[in-house]
Image (cartoon, chains in turn blue, red):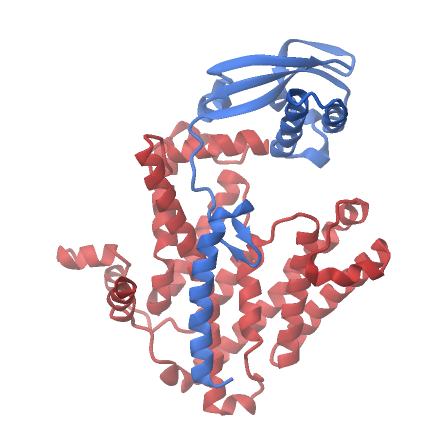
Length: 151
Length: 321
């Protein structure tokens, strides 16, 4: 390839990347391999609507009042070291519960059990909170218990 | 199209202080630095792909392996055999690439090592965008001529070598610009919806608190930012500026070392504030910006300030400097 051709090719590649990279912001994970939108840490979650689990017993120990699993992170299995992974499992469990799918529900329960190093009983709650306030003092705007799971 | 042409002419070309490739090609010092930096990039690939060794236990025990098309041949082998073969290939290619960085075979090996590494991570559902700048740099280097002394006595080869190195710089800087533009777009949308955006004084502390909740991490500096949101706000403003105008630095070589140092500081600060390490970016910033061969003879700090994108223009208009 001559120098002139290389120059044109390079310019073409940069333009193609800029366009396809930008368009990949609309795809899952903002990525269309090998293009990525570089849409990183750009959105501030003002309010979160999340399903969380509140642990009522851990191993042989009764936890009263129940605590969010986020406050017992030392018992989260190393294979689920990020809460986002546990969140995915909780969301799947709630989906199965709402769809009345017994098989998926049992599978979801097992997946959550495997996320902890000790057997747990828990309530699944629907919450709405402001992340900053939640992190500082666990303050919640709204919380509703959906169902309970016992060991 | 005319608007884009106007922006390119007014903001990039007219402001450009990058010497012509023809004159850069005549400078032996520039050529020597470009070649050694290409060698540095080839060596860095070893450091990246070595991650596989530390992930070996996880790979061997995992069952959720869905090969991407590039790894179609995995179905002809038993999984453990495939894993051993691909790991050996990746490491071998990376080593050959680093050792023969002056030859075209070396460039091909470096590219293959990275492409196989990315394919493997993708087949496990992982994310590889952190290594994209390397993928693009090694892809461009496939078009490099032989970098032997004999070959580089040819002017056309010297010009092509410099051009492709500038291309690798352009991709790295483009990625930062895209990230900065995305942040501005989202900030505008969030503000229009009446929400707090990353450009709001409490935006960074909100973002960090959410990040901390769902990653279960408490980075070293997070409490400072949560308790003094102004620190995070100033940091975010600086990062958005640094990222958005990154591409303009391609045309202002005198700022490349400073920009590289600031980007390095940015990545180090995200380790302490978010536990997010863009490790491959650090290696590439070093090879392409901090050790830039195009940085002109040292200019006064005052003159450098006037060359800063946007801010420099304001300084000049107000006759501050």
